[in-house]
Image (cartoon, rainbow, N blue to C red; front, side, top):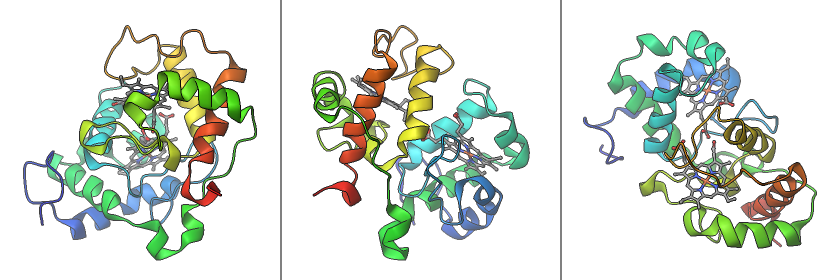
Length: 195
Ligand code: HEC
Ligand code: HEC
């Protein structure tokens, strides 16, 4: 079954599931992750985005030696990586158990967050926070805010490149308070937090 336009071969979800066992230790049995900064959700994430991130970890453009070593990422073939990504993309947490799909609400200045988000983020991550999977733009509303906070700091510290642009200045002038405001708005867009 061909699921993703990024895969060069017909993906094998069974192989993906098998290979993903080494990811479960940190990302959870279903790729649901946990609310802390160090266990992002993979379930339902666009495969193309995940493949790009895995390559970035292997190339050390994103730094996470524990993940590379624990999962022997260096020894996985390209097809294995495509299969793992397709497997995680195919997981529908709501179907397995809606509780797994919960994103905690980050408390902050939601009104300020909304203003910042609609001014600077909406054009790519979309009004509903769901991103544009075919363009490799991740859904912020389905990711844990503490993890996102850390990623924004990584962008600010030039430890990770945002939007493929090393000169990107989206986060340069944001204070921690403004980042928290943004995340309080983004987390309010998660389906389980919508009123
Ligand atoms: C030892 C723990 C650990 C293991 C095992 C692990 N990961 Fe990770 N993974 C992490 C951490 C921590 C991060 C976030 C790191 C950061 O801040 O960049 C992460 C980030 C990611 C991301 C980026 C998510 C995003 O939203 O950008 C992807 C994709 C990913 N992991 C895939 C995998 C896959 C696939 C496997 C199994 C082959 C795996 N990981 C195994 C700890 C782990
Ligand atoms: C011009 C398009 C664009 C705009 C505007 C934009 N982003 Fe992004 N963003 C991206 C892309 C593309 C990625 C994926 C980067 C990659 O491939 O590593 C991304 C990734 C991210 C991530 C990492 C998500 C993860 O799972 O690791 C965060 C956090 C983020 N953006 C926050 C924001 C915020 C907050 C704003 C507004 C202040 C914003 N972005 C504005 C395109 C954009």
